[in-house]
Image (cartoon, rainbow, N blue to C red; front, top):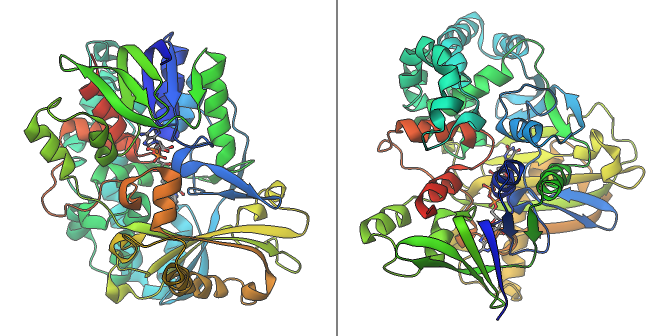
Length: 490
Ligand SMILES: Cc1cc2nc3c(=O)[nH]c(=O)nc-3n(C[C@H](O)[C@H](O)[C@H](O)COP(=O)(O)OP(=O)(O)OC[C@H]3O[C@@H](n4cnc5c(N)ncnc54)[C@H](O)[C@@H]3O)c2cc1C
């Protein structure tokens, strides 16, 4: 059977895998990325149906349209010399139990919303939180993620930021805890507490008490600075993926699609390469990097090749819940171009932010980039973020009537959320696709349709290395990749 050699094999072409591979190629390594699917990008891939270009996952970004930026993806694109033209905007829609309103990123606009909904004392609490977060936000961006490495080279890459690290050292320690602790010290107002829980959930898939303070500090640094804007890449999430693939290939790296890795080859406790499902072997002279989830990576490692305790520890990483998706192509006649691209719907604060079907995210990116839909049409992605129990779907036959029925029932909450934004949405629809946790599992190659490690509330204390990594997690789930990068490294 065919064998190929390279320096480094990267398993998976998600944003994490492609970023890692493109940087390695940029710095002179031979790299091959093996991707299970026919389309690169993992959770961020784009796909086309009847002339509508859909984002399969993310669409809310900041820090991509300017450099230097604290956004790790922008830093990688800068390093590989790739452009990513973006449309900028600042407003998003909120459909909350308190009512429906638009708000802009930036501190002042939110204070106006707060004054209207909760009065002056709530505004004062929010300002106090901003004061507390200000030094933490500077600490969170004190080291660019791209400078972080786990060998002696860190003396040079991180060393040059030593003055800034020293200056921020007291705050760096605070960043290793949960954001919930900071919130508890400052915020009493129930609406602000719910709001912060929501922001944490959107950022990390977890409520405030399980979200790292570093992630929220990074968000405060980015979202509440003067003149802040949000960014949407022209061409959608696919444009981001294309930029990374272009960079990878320009520096000599290879991307192989439809190349499912069946096994990581291990000899004398060293990762030596991978075997693909089609039998082909790719030998890695330097390292194997896994961009697959921790649970899926463990399955690729033959028994007894890593310490049992380590395997059990990693296997026990808690999972977050899965997702439901509604992808629509609609008739756009009469829809105002002032409608916000992103909306968040919360049905009931009392149920808790992680409750199934309680939070719904809506993105209508063709309002920002009309090239994503045919003329006078719009492309819409609605999803229930990390709150759909996988157990409801486990073992179902995707061709069965029961599955079709359940799809329809569980999608209803997304239709209802969308009706708060476009009341006659059901009459406008020309393309409809409902995705379930099983769709997730299939198209993102993730065990059980989970995307990232979930809630270990109360137990988790972030170590320094995790803190460094969580700064990368802010936008992309990179932690598993880097963890495995060090683990599988020769
Ligand atoms: C619906 C949704 C909305 C989101 N919204 C936002 C947002 O607005 N903003 C934001 O910043 N983030 C958002 N996120 C999160 C963001 O999309 C993810 O954190 C990020 O894309 C994950 O990238 P990754 O590289 O870590 O992993 P993945 O994208 O999961 O990539 C892993 C890759 O590995 C491949 N793979 C797995 N196993 C194998 C194997 N054995 N062989 C070969 N290939 C394999 C998979 O096919 C996949 O391509 C969203 C996520 C979802 C699902």
